[in-house]
Structure formats: C-alpha cells, structure tokens
Length: 273
Image 1 (cartoon, one colour):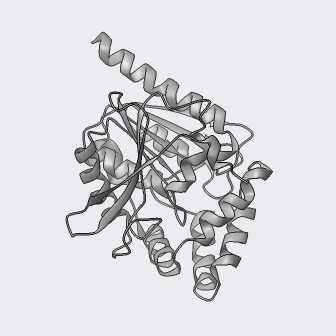
Image 2: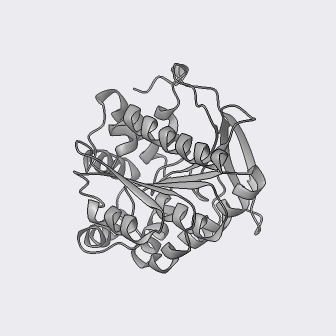
C-alpha cells in the first residue's frame, strides 16, 4: 500500500472554469521554479501522480496536478470530453503560468491539444495517441457496454490487472484510485476517446516535445507513440523496453529522471539563446 506519509506535501486549490465548473488541483515544489502541469489519464485522478513525489526526491520544479472535470475533487459538470478538458487546462495553465505540459494516456491526448493551442516551453506525452486505432479502439468499444452494468469495484480490479506491471505495494492504492471513479463520467469520456481525432493539431505544436512509451504497452501500442514522434516537428522519443502502458508507475525513478532531464535540457537551451 502506498505510504502517503513518505510523499511531499500537496496544496489543494480550486480554479473556476469558464462555465463555472470548479477544477481541483494540487500544487507542489518550489514556488519560484519553472512550472509543470501533470495531466492524468482515463478513469483515474490526480492521485495517479503521487508515486512520483517522494520526500527523499522532492520535485525540483513547481508542479500543477489537476483533476479532469468529473474526476477526483473536480466538479461533476459535463461535458466530459477531450476538448472541454483541454479548454479547462489551457485556462488553468494561463492562471498558474505553466511552462511545460505533461500527460499520460488520455491525459497525453489532452496535453497535445493544450500544447497545440497554447504557448509552452515544452511538452511530454507518455503512453498516448492522437487517434485510437485497431486493437485499442476495439478494446474500449468492447469494455463500455460491460461497464454500464458493472460495479466500480469490479471495474477497478480489472483495470489494475490488465496492462499493468506495477510494484506489489502499489496495487491496493491504484485499485482505490480506480474504484473512486464515477461511472457516468468514465462512460461518457470513454465514448469521447473513441471519437476523438487530434491528428490535425500535431503540426501546430511548436515547442520541444518528448514522447515516452513502453515497448510492452498492450493498451496503447508503441506505434501510436511513434506516430506522434514522426509528425511533431521538434520531437524526441524514449522507449522503455521493460514497461507496459503505465510507464509512470512501472518505471517511476527512470521516468522521473527522463522527465526532469528533458526539462533541464530545454531550459538550458533557452538560456543559451
């Protein structure tokens, strides 16, 4: 079980979106440092990022860690779509002066849209896609009708077991994260994920980008990450050979090192010019 006492302190704040929805987010790290926004994926919450915040390795940068509307502590106010989430987070990024946007899975899709429509120093897209195709699409299409009849405890058990290779001590914690999801939000956002196509936005991403993917990802196969890498003008790619879909948890220390290394390099380049 994740030991929350061993993690850095998190300041819970709220931001009011254009339509009045209250968006919850954590703030951590030095107030005077460059700011990163970390966006979670489908059916989880900002809790997903906790394992990246141990006290013995406190963040060097200021972190903004929001809940997508309808998730975690954010208000349940539809629509629960990629476009709406990106609109919320673009406004939040302006409010909190975000320099880098980071997203995992569906959060990476949202981060792509935010990066394309905003102005940032850099972006990181982990285990994500511009448009679902082939096996991932069929998987979500298959799962949604079952989810409409499934209790959230069963959904949580299946979610943790499929496609994850996380440390044993984190299994119960991740199960609780999934179990706290709201069924209607998960279903509606899942349907949006099936329809969403952000491929046309990739040429509009002008900042440096790092694409991160697990070679053993069965949920979003590496071909999706390679598609982003080839079509974003200033993109590099790192593949974690022993990781599946959940590179953030499966390779936590390595992911943190790669993430901060990318940020360091971008900032050094900016200083040089």
